[in-house]
Length: 154
Picture (cartoon, helix red, strand yellow):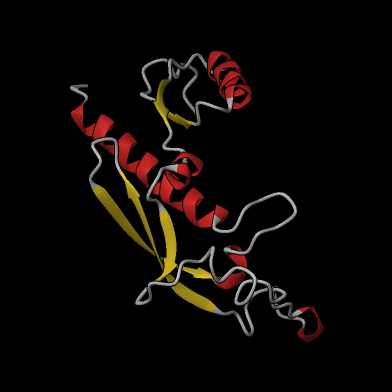
């Protein structure tokens, strides 16, 4: 049985500042559930990627993903529909990527990510490295939420 009163439940919600529509939606849901959420500003991977000095490169190489975009990333993604396997299981190519960006104090930060090559490719709607930077922002956002939770007294 679910409790009928959720008001004592401490609820943390991670939200991108640029997605006010999502915040409004979750505020409505929380209101209906009688929750008083604590909003945590998400780290926007798009903003990290746009910082001067930020780059996404192949680990162990000085070659950036942007520089290799037309060569290594222009290949079509592997599709295994003929084999009956879920897409991406057979023949999935992964690489280790290193992202670097200056933090708010100008100190260089790094993150290593192993990702499928097709997840780093540009699409009609995204830039090269979009999912990698999004994954970094997501991870940092959850770290921010955990720090906030651990600093709370109640």
